[in-house]
Length: 148
Image (cartoon, rainbow, N blue to C red):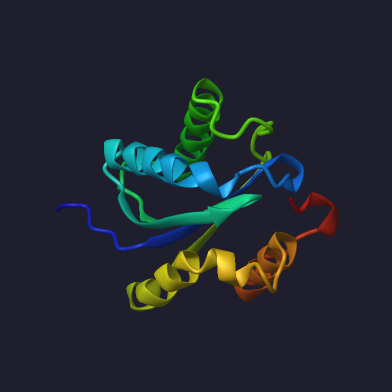
């Protein structure tokens, strides 16, 4: 029997200390690089976007790819890419952890639209407030001191 999955992930990765260093002028280049990483790992990218202090990735992960390994690879490769290309001069790295939330296929379009509208969304809500809401919505217990 073959392996079949349909799990949509929203992966959220913040900059170290929530520093607002991912300037708009070079974000698109970073997002294209992330797209290439996912394509090389046979994952399906639906949307990637973000603002100065974090990024969102909406993807279907290939069944042979472990989520933690994927996020680690994205963070390591992106850090090197950012530094080698001097994309964001004040970038000091990513937060230690990450958020990963699952969605059903019927929620995909809404999720993509949400991630596409990050700039507008964050005119009203901080990354920390958004992250807490995601954790609460997905009934994930957390301690404030460990939040990004």
